[in-house]
Amino acid sequence: MIDYTPFVVAVYGITVVIYGLLTLKWQRSLKRAQQQLSEQENP
Amino acid sequence: MNFLARIQRPLGIITLLALGASTWMVFNAPLDFQQGNSVRILYAHVPSAKMALFCYILLTLSSIVYLWKKNETADILAEAAAPVGAAFTAVTLASGAIWGKPMWGTWWAWDARLTSMLVLLILYMGIMALRNALDEPLKAARATAVLAIIGAVDLPIIHYSVVWWRTLHQPASFGGSSGNPSITGDLLPPLLAMAISFILLGGYLVVLKAREVEAHRQLEQLDVERMEEDD
Image 1 (cartoon, each protein chain N blue to C red):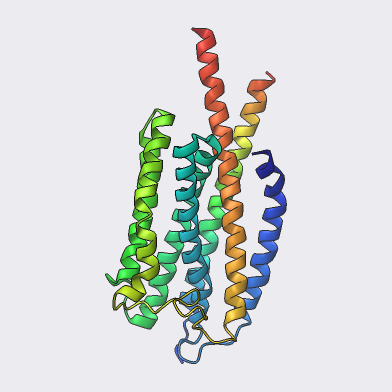
Image 2: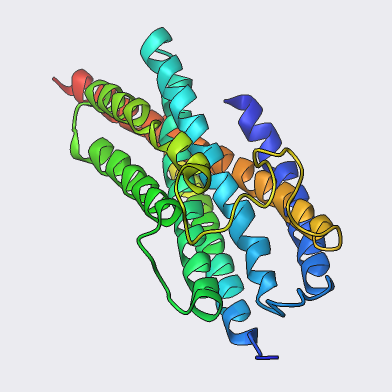
């Protein structure tokens, strides 16, 4: 049987990268916005 | 929105544990007698496709509630659901193409299911681009809600495309017209585990993005108030 491992690795790699990067990007953006909010509300 | 702040962390931890357990199940599941190892691609592809549709249902319902009740929380949920749905759609198309090359002999075919999923990605992109293009927030919310509701016509087309047309894409793995899963019992538990994990992942991403959108809106509101005070 043909070894399809590279295809499987590519799919799971893309999946982890897309969902992982989105999570990190939005977590950082939320944290930054919350910091700015607290600085502006309590200067 | 305080509710979203309370559930975000526990939901994230449960999602990570569920993803870890379901990934272990996927890589310990038996191989398909014809597809071999490549069947593992479907454990990421099918749940992503389901979540791409669920996110659009959330986007449509939020848009209807926003237009009907002028509820800002509904608009925030609609704004959050679009990029999450776009990500699930992109993963669906990419994983389908990577599975299609060894199984069908081609990365892409202008098949009814594939084309209607591509239309869904274009719709998500269009909705996000429209919101970014309009400076007036109320006008942007109304315009994207209307576009999202019109675009919902693509959902039944995607779901029934494998029934209405003779397609290269196989019929639904589960949730098809017969009501019974069309895959063998050995392969079903990891697929269901991955589906539950992706529902949790989608929920976590929508909660996270909704909180981010709300925080940015509060910052913009503070800026507007400050400018009005200065005037």
